[in-house]
Image 1 (spheres, helix red, strand yellow):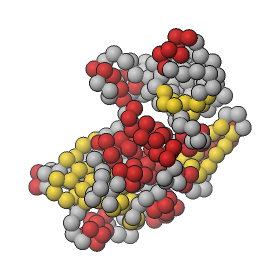
Image 2 (cartoon, rainbow, N blue to C red):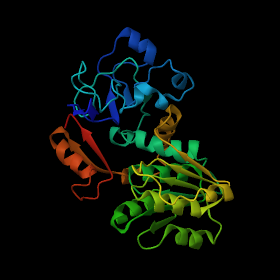
Image 3 (cartoon, rainbow, N blue to C red):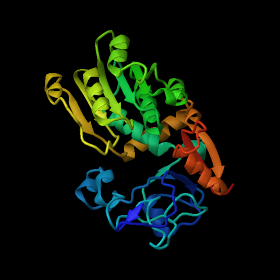
Length: 321
C-alpha cells in the first residue's frame, strides 16, 4: 500500500474473524456485542453520514477507498496511525467505532467464516447485482477466489447452468469450481468461450457473464458480450489497467445488453454468505486450501501471490498458533 507515493509499514489482513476480548459499555450498546462473541469484521470503515452510507451503499463511501489519502481501512492502514493494530495478522486488533460487524453463526468455524467477504462478493455480483436465479445460464470468467465465490452464489441462487472458465494452468481451480457447483468448465486457451457457449447452450447464449479474470481486456470483454443472449448482462469486477481496443459498442445496442462494473460487497451480501455457511449445503472447505500460524505469514503470502505453486485458493492465518 502507498501513501504520498511512499511504501508504508502496515499489518496486513482484511478478511478477519475474531472473538471480542474487551469492550466498553457504549460499544456494547452501539454494536449489540459482548465479550466472547465471535464476529466477522468487514474491511470498510465508512463515515456513516454521507449519502452512500445513509442509503446503505457504504462500500462507495470515500472513507472506504484505500487509494484515497487519509482513508482508514483494515489491512492497509499504516502502523503510524494510532493505535497501529489495523490488520488481522496479529493476535489483537483495534476495533474502530465505525467498524462493521457480522455475528458468526453457531457451528461455523473461524477458518470457514474468514471467507465471508470474498463469498459475500460472489453474492453481491452474481445474485444482488447480476440477478442470477432459476432457469438462468451464468458464465464466470476466472476461477480465483472471487470467481469461485460467484459460482457458489449462482448455485445457491438456483441458476440452472453454471459455466466457469479459466486457462489450462488453472486446472485445479476449475476442478474446485465443479465441486462448488459449476456444471461445465472451459479452458479458454483450448476452446474459445464463444464456441463453448454455442456448444453448451445449443446456440441460445447466456443470461449473465461475470468477469473476474486477469485476462486481456479486449478478448475477454469482447468474447463475453458475444456469448450473451439478448438482454443479457455482463458485469466486470476485474481491473484490466489498459483500454479496450477495437471495442464493438454496437453489440451492446444490438443485444440490448447491460454492461456495468461492480466492486465490493454490501452488508446483505456478507450476511447471505454467513447464512450459507451455517446451512452447510455447499462444502466450502474446497476453497480453504491452506492454513498457517503467524510464523508462516511470509510463506502464506507467497502462496496467495502465486510465487509458490502449491494449489492455493484461500489461505488463512491463525495468530494464536
